[in-house]
Amino acid sequence: MREINSEFKNTDSVNLESVEPVAEPAAVEPVAPVVEAPAPVVEAPAPVVEAPAPVVEAPAPGLTVTLYSTKNLHHGVHGKLIVGVNVVKKDSADFWLKTKKVRIATPDEIANA
Image (cartoon, rainbow, N blue to C red; front, side, top):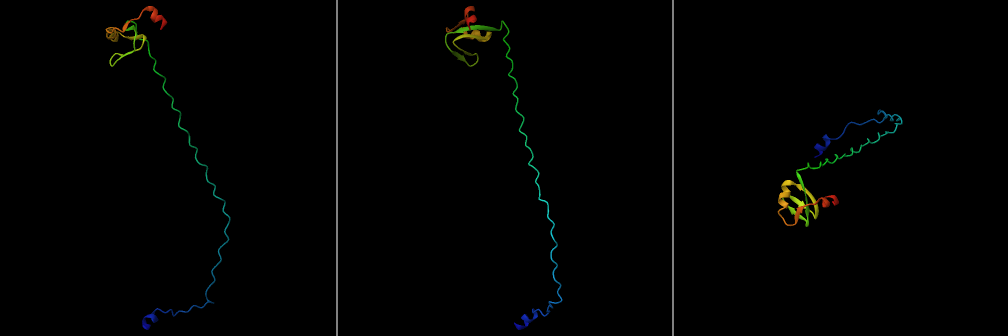
């Protein structure tokens, strides 16, 4: 064991007088503080402009019939009628006039509607 340990012994001796002193660090110049750029401006999305409602044109004369209903009625194909004066297409009028609760409206009923 002694032989192994003797191999690793440091035989070099250091003369402290021959060692040069470490230079002191140079003076540090003051650095200007880092200024962060302002956050980017986020624009709001443009408002959604709704399209104007489509213009509903009055039905052409001769294609519609004015009916008077004494009761609220509805049908899947021919639509619905409310109590009072209703304007319907001629095809639907033929269907509705087959019921006892619907008749052709009088000119006075149309004027008061």
